[in-house]
Image (tube, rainbow, N blue to C red; front, top):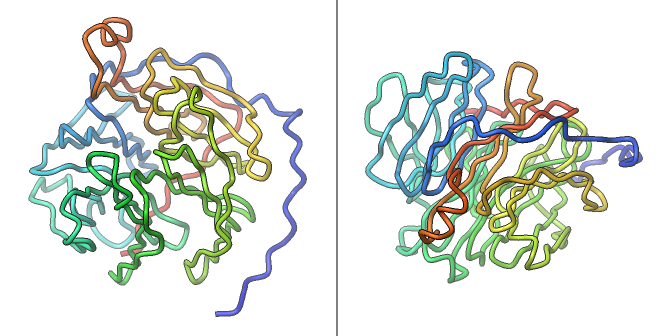
Length: 317
């Protein structure tokens, strides 16, 4: 496959931007052990999210306040809507599966790509504009570098792209427009690193891995992330009580959303105009004193921003 030619990046002018409007609010005091997997359904105008360690999928309608919950036999961590079939494609502990919330039946595995790595589970993931579902695995104990990055194609093929992570998070994309992004970003959470790859959107291939940003220990660890319509990256900080907005080229911080709890896990845009940033958090591992000081730990938060996000891509299968 020949290398793609990309147009030059638009000059970045962070001084003209004020990305956050208002203060974050807790929209659900959910008390999740490990909230994650945020997905705004444009079709349904609802928010899907998961509590990984409680093995639960949640569907919340912000208009009515109605919440529906499904409990699984193993951990569920990320999800995407399907373009050509009912329901969702999800990552369970051992890999990719199909699940239809309408029928409520058992999920059906598509791929279990690492059966020999018995101490692993799948973690974060999302689809690219071509309908491929990228997801990472991780060591359940968050210690051994046994996690990897996978790509599930619409035709069902599953490919391993990167290896050697204790905890994976992301990915997200930026540069060149939402349909033909130039770069993919992926987090090595335990090392505090965000990597950037040159991305070929036609082939779905990665090259030229570079360290895009390393966070200082007092900033927390980079967890889930997303991209807005201006190409800015929004990154959740585990242990850092914040979400930060960054220039996709320089990695400079442009804005910060401070949360009243330390373990911030993921973020995704939603709402009718995609200008609401939803933020998930966790309470796992907190002692009684910390829980008393952070009563909203594990809650779901929302904050308004100046630029819309991008609609979540559908899985092409």
